[in-house]
Figure (cartoon, rainbow, N blue to C red):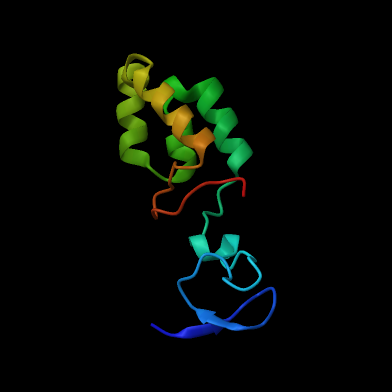
Length: 104
């Protein structure tokens, strides 16, 4: 574990510090949370809301196998589609590569 320079005041701090102990500036940017999917968040939300029981949002993000399952079960009788919709809204839904689909 090493030391880094504060993004706010420039003093040396530990690399795992969430905020600077000297000035209180946050140290981790949105990019630190990892890569994001290239799939559009708004498109995913709309597909899930309007066509979620058919699994269209899963086809869009590249999850073909589960998209077919949703198509034949009508989105797990709506429950699976509802859970997916909540996951998309919260930003926890991932594409086929495991990258989060988020509006942030």
